[in-house]
Length: 274
Image 1 (cartoon, rainbow, N blue to C red):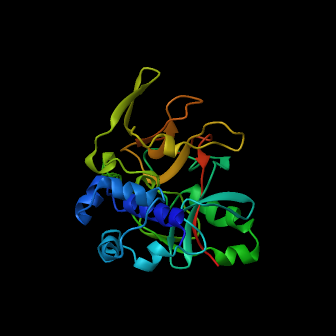
Image 2 (tube, rainbow, N blue to C red):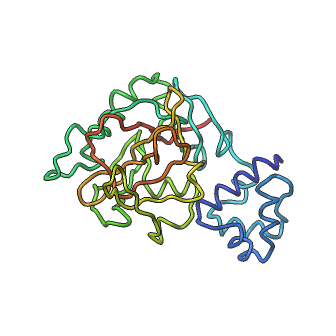
């Protein structure tokens, strides 16, 4: 067994299920230091703890102890891009591009009288059309059609779109905190308000996972990128940096103008792994 891979798998599943190390340890009646040693690859869980651990993490014992062909957190090449593996389920893996691969508007217009949703957006049409067609026939066959679930804005309650079926999509607020680190701010609505150029910019999540969410564009500079979740009452959503060149990335729950052409694109998809 590869202790490092198993530890990484436990860490990802713990965060996905919104446990801190202390909370998981309490459920298992062990110390948080024991959890830390598992996740760092120093030790493995005791056999007697595995059934309870698997139940708490919503995973099978085999999926914890014998990760599939790709590892969560691993960097892989697919098509002409580098992708980060966010999750693994059976013979499929959820991947997202490691960098912002291009910039484009989420939609051509930002007329607030006609709210733009993921379902209707130019971005969705582009990702599931021109973008995916650049992959080979073999690669396209590996991409699974995914049920992209309806998710309203968790703070403003802004309505979004019906569930869609897509091969390529953007991440949501919920997926961002699930896979990059959950401080509880999204659920508890304990964000902060920022002012940009003297104007109130709205609520944002600014927490200990800022660095984990940091991303670069293809030129190697800090970048912001679009999410598919709806923003506040008058805009879509974006994930922005605090200032140009900052390594800290915060999540804007208020959203931004869908027609901004400098919005970063970071596609996600579920692919079949061998």
